Amino acid sequence: MKKFSLLLGTLGGAMAGYILSNEKLRKQMSEAPNAEAMAKMLGEQLTKDGKKVAKEVKSFVESDDVQKNLKKAKAFASKKLGVAQHELEKYAKKGMKEAKKYAKQGAKKMKAMV
Image 1: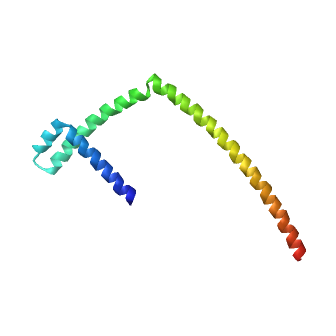
Image 2 (image 1 turned 120 degrees about the vertical axis):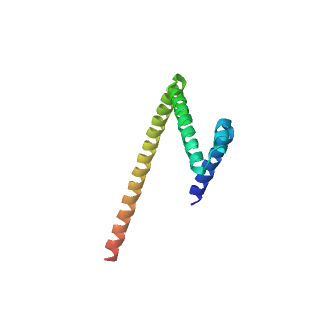
Image 3 (image 1 turned 45 degrees about the horizontal axis):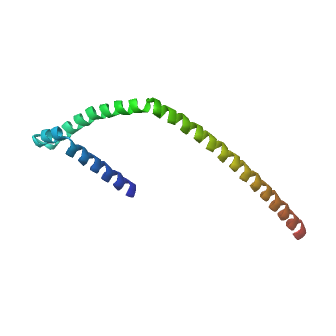
C-alpha cells in the first residue's frame, strides 16, 4: 500500500508541476465551465505534449552516442553474466561435493545403527 500511495503522490506532484509550468493550459482551465471540461483540456494537452516528448526520446535513443554506450553496456552485461555463471557453477559443484560427503556419512551411521 505504501508503494501505491507513493506512486499517487509522485503522479500528483508531476501533474501539478506540469499544470503550473504551462501558462496557456492554466488560463484555459480557469475559463472552463466544469471539471469535465478541465479534464478534457488537460487530456488533450498531455496527448499533444506526450507526442513531442516521445519524438524527442526516440531521437535521443537513436543517436550515435547512446548507441555506442548501449553497445558498451551490452558487452559489460554479457561479461558479468559469464562471470556470474562461472561462480554459480563453482558453488553448485562445491555444494554437490558437500552433499555427497554428508550422504555417505549418513549412510554409514544408518548401517551402524541397523
